[in-house]
Image 1 (spheres, rainbow, N blue to C red):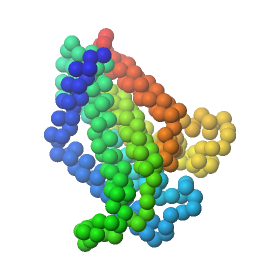
Image 2 (cartoon, rainbow, N blue to C red):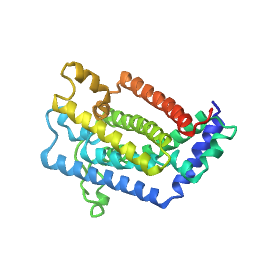
Image 3 (cartoon, helix red, strand yellow):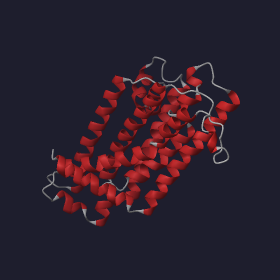
Image 4 (cartoon, rainbow, N blue to C red):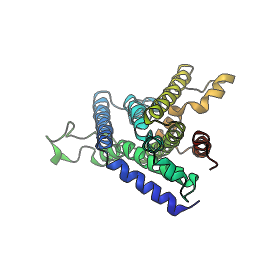
Length: 275
């Protein structure tokens, strides 16, 4: 593993990303969606107050599987990861990378880290906005008239919920980046990579909804036990409750490692080379 080569690829991918105006529009749309969800959170709490059950707490749901966050991930992840490998193949620059002295594993790691950085940037506004609410909480009266909720949220946020939710989004974006690297490594066209990634995320969403339909995945059963590790949105909800599940962290780290290894093998198979 050549750290210098990995850093070079990571830096080059980020520069390429921020040179494209379309990617800036994607980032702006992701921030706007998080802002709309924050406004919804404040309005919901102001209207109904905090519920007695923790699972119904909108603060915890804000960093968990809510409609705004699910929708953001479903379209942002395919768009931002489809170019990691497939775009280089389309332009003909991939052959230069795989025939250079840099190892293929280092190239894929650099691209994966770049995709992780970009996806984490798109999801970063969610914990940041929640942090603003926890610090503000109705005390910033000088903002009156400049935003939709000038009086503040009017509730306190547990630090554990904020930290756990932020960690969950960070790890989740890493898993998404690994899956995006794999689908991009499999395809010769960015559009096909995006469609494959969107289809995979849609399948995982269906699995999560199926687990929720049978009782949030907690009921025993053979097929349910087999499906539970693929209910990724339930995993995100675990972090948003304020806990740091060490076992889940190890599981997701193993998934990222296995996915990147599979992406390496896929590149060798698609390119037909010895590397």
